[in-house]
Length: 288
Image (cartoon, rainbow, N blue to C red; front, side, top):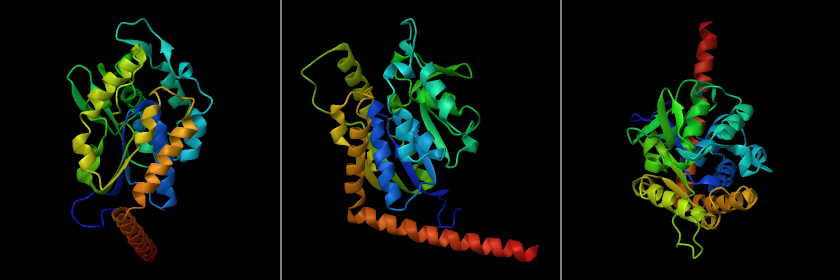
């Protein structure tokens, strides 16, 4: 309901970055946002942010999303493929989404949602936001090159959105009065231990982090989780620890004076929105 002036379609938007298993920090951050009584009018997610974001947009609580992933091994989310375009195929991720999501299309979600992917052929960012391509779009957004083979949607191969837009603030910036961004993928010093695993992760991080600088500056409230960098991007054994880091970092960010001011304005907006809804309801009843 655009009752707050200018041409903003949404009042508050959440932008959730990619980061592999570090994305569990998003769940801790979302729990803090709920504790402050704020709610998004739209969510944009890349990779792990798309995975957390789609379940939240589908009506799952942060705790319920955590439970879905607990006691899962990485092998349960992947299928093996011959190493032509990637070491693994993403059929496990796809099955997980189909088995657990309540919605089958973007339109069925409780909160508008945008999944950010990369067009592998044209080397450009693409945003999915409508139709029955919901699961395919999230799978594509999580398809890290080399690790996973590209996800084909409508004859076009797509890969992880983090390649070109790891922190999707700009995707919703112009449509929102306020944007809260959660960035769970930050650069850390190079590990002394070098392996194919650490090299692949750092290579992807260097590519994805280089495109986050502008988006970081576009946030009204920025939550960054530096502590999660000690965890590997496919670490499913420390969900609770990663989520707790997200909770602590979000608590610190929202406790700042600027953040509290925005939260206060959000609550005033909710009150105004409720009054408008009540007036509309009374008008409809009066005209029956």
